[in-house]
Image 1 (cartoon, rainbow, N blue to C red):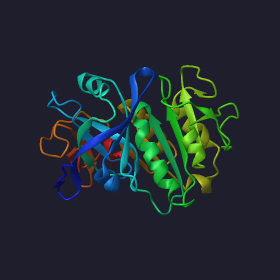
Image 2: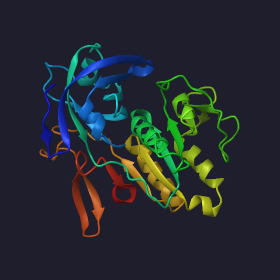
Image 3: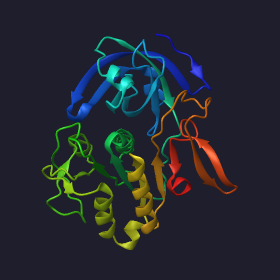
Length: 291
């Protein structure tokens, strides 16, 4: 295995593909053997992946799960262009060159015990990773995970066994893995999927927040990843309830290690507007600084 450090935090690995599943809507879940990435990744981290030996430009893909002990890393991605189309053809046993883990992760506050995780589309993986991180903390937090998608979810939803106060009883579809971790989840879509909230995931979040009393609401912090319009709506929702909010931005990247400045966004700071690189200054930012 080839590996070297970059700034002592980012590793290059020739990762073996262990499994590669395809789902409706051009979605894929790929597991690779990448011990360094697995050992150092945190929720919000991503990898810069060489999708094919014949394609020079890498693609940034969020990390969905890791096993530090077994050394594997899971990625969920959707075919969007040439890179991910080539990546989808890769088979178990083949090697992928990955640069990981990259980025500033989410930060869980000690004083807010009710994290609200909101994921949309390919923004779902960081929320699963964060939920797994919370699960490992042995009931230190009471998390709720809300996920929205306008294509079939990349898992078989099932009725949740966990009651969520403030959400209609008919909204019962959940991600089985999260139920197994005893972390409640609910799904939202406008596609009339059974058991899902019929509407935007942010409207489902608003319904839940409205059902909390003042003390409960003061314990909430919002975490989100998804397309920009959804993140903007999440920031608006957080402002509405005066809640702290962290968002992971999606942006096109070239080098992904801060050298090219091709992924900069304007961020408000105490010293005024500043241009920040999504790859290494983010991808996680305070929502109010970017929206």
